[in-house]
Length: 331
Ligand code: NDP
Ligand code: GDR
Image (cartoon, rainbow, N blue to C red):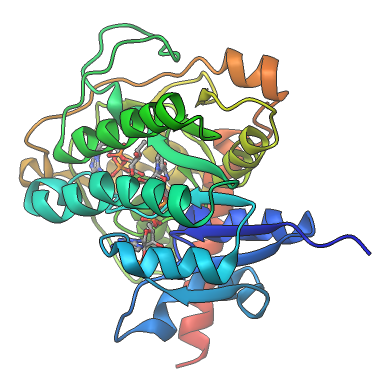
């Protein structure tokens, strides 16, 4: 009998953690996840329940800012692969809570690398880096060699996480890879992010529960893909003999306004009838345009995205309509 491979995921209760868990379970892994203590634990497992896998993953109480708890998590999970997806991941919040963002999103990576080095030295490590690190770059499309220019406390923290991962790989020979992932979404996206905010509003308007959607800056352009496609790239990175850094993107960039128009049109609505631009929702510094060049991921990993933006936005609108209908039916 072959023993099952074991994976430990931080951020397992988030969007990517849920889809990655599903993929790893399908691949026959035993999946462990770090969950931070919360008074609302039953709400936090919602995404895993949505995918029907909550009973199949093993949750371990730990926190990215608490190294002893991470060492204990390593000892319990004895992982072959570690995916560090946990973070304060909302860019706008990073201006309101820069210290929390730095402690978790930057310092948490160092804690994880130390925990792996000390307690699971053979494990392969994945760091969830971000296209936000390119921020103000004037070079487009962006690839692994494009210089970084972070434009938020979040992006600065991610840049630290990226370089400390590279440094531990080069210093200690760790199998540590950094995935520079561009925006990816799904029906499990947090409601504060722009795609889900829009698809939820479209569903409310469609069902007569709301009339208006207040938006921030409609001009920024993003390279949006589907989380289900992107977690496959994470896994592929850790299946390689050699660790490396990879851009993961679709190569197509779309404005917030065009994405918005797409979502309304999917429900037979016109965005111009409902959207109000509110300057109070603008960010202190904006990232105007992101577009990734995922040639390395395509060549080395054989990774290509399968789900189009139109299909994804349609899936998200339909899922939000379904959720609201179910809530209404439940009273
Ligand atoms: P989410 O915001 O959905 O999930 C974040 C996860 O981190 C949650 O499980 C959260 O737990 C956990 N977490 C937050 N703080 C701590 C802490 N102190 N200790 C332990 N866990 C903590 O993010 P996504 O799934 O969208 O993204 C996954 C990762 O990929 C993040 O690092 C993000 O920054 C990065 N990324 C995401 C992209 C995207 O477009 N989605 C693109 C590029 C990078 P809880 O449920 O308790 O809040
Ligand atoms: P982003 O995602 O900051 O790119 O970070 P988000 O969806 O929050 O914003 C995308 C763009 O939309 C503009 N925008 C609005 N955004 C939000 N959230 N709400 C609004 O009302 C609104 N109006 C306009 C924003 O200004 C921005 O330009 C995401 C996160 O998942 C990060 O963790 C990840 O690293 C990056 O993607 C890649």
